[in-house]
Length: 115
Image 1: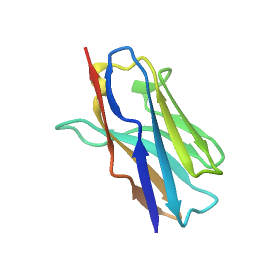
Image 2: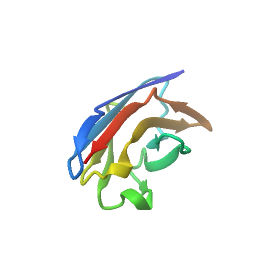
Image 3: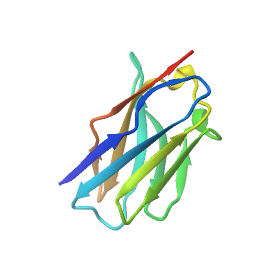
Image 4: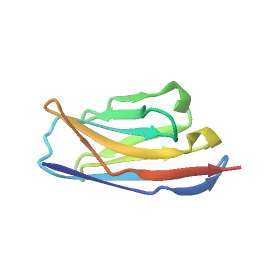
């Protein structure tokens, strides 16, 4: 079993920055993909960014150039540095770990961007 715990969400003004962290524990395989997804009110959950254990990254077009995903394999932790935040970035951000065709989700952390 895998357990994910997110942290770092909060309230920030537009143009500001936040850094999210997600620590994974349990039976973590060497090869996996960790990522961040978000869900705004009345919208479906969407991909924000992913990073493989080999540090290959993928970003949604809406966050390219503003967000950076990274990971520390020794700590089984993934980070999301969010800069130049916009009102439309407001959402609950979820951490996801995928390994051996199984997906595990964190409980989510709220990010609210104010004007």
